[in-house]
Amino acid sequence: MNDDLQAVFLDRDGTIGGSDRVEYPGEFQLFSYSAEVIEQIKAKGIPVFSFTNQPGISRAEASEDDFVRELKAFGFDEIYLCPHHHKEGCQCRKPSTGMLEKAAKEHSLDLSKCAVFGDRWTDIMAAKSAGCIAVLVLTGSGTAAYEQNHQTSNVLPDYVAENLQTGADWLLKACVEI
Image 1: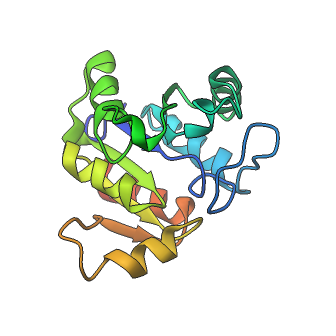
Image 2 (image 1 turned 120 degrees about the horizontal axis):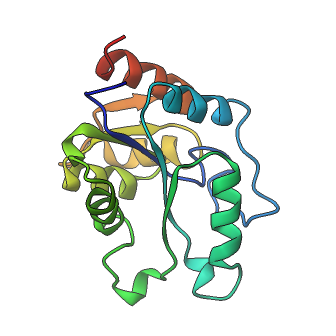
C-alpha cells in the first residue's frame, strides 16, 4: 500500500484521449496507453479520479450520465465533473478548486499528497491552488498551453510530460516508495 501519494486526478479531453477539443461519449477515444496507466497507478494502491469540465451538459449536447458511464468504463474510481458553462460562475469549474475540494472531503484526502494531470493551464492552476502536484501533459492542448504560459505565468507545473505515460512514470518514481 502506498502511504505517500493519496490520489491521482486525470483530466479527460486531451489528457487521457481525444484531442484539443471536447469529444462526447461515443466519439471519444482513449490514447493507446491510458487504460494501462490508470491500472498501473491503481495497482500501487492509489485511487484514480476523473477531473473534467464538460459544459456541453449544460447546453444539452450530452448527458452527465453518459460521461459518468464512459469514465467508469475507463477504470476511474470516482468521477468529478463540472457540467457548467464558464459564464455560470460555479465553484467546481476549473481553474476553481471545487472538484478537488469535494474529492478531498469525500475521501479524506490531503491534497498536498495528490497529483493532477492535465493539458490546459486551468488544470495546472486548479492543482496549484489546491496544493496538489501539477503535471502538464503536452498532448491535446498541452503544447499550446505550455508555449503560451510557461514564461509569463506565476503558476507553473511541477513537471511537464510528453504524455500521460511519461508523466505517470515520473510521478510513480518520484512519489511512491517501491
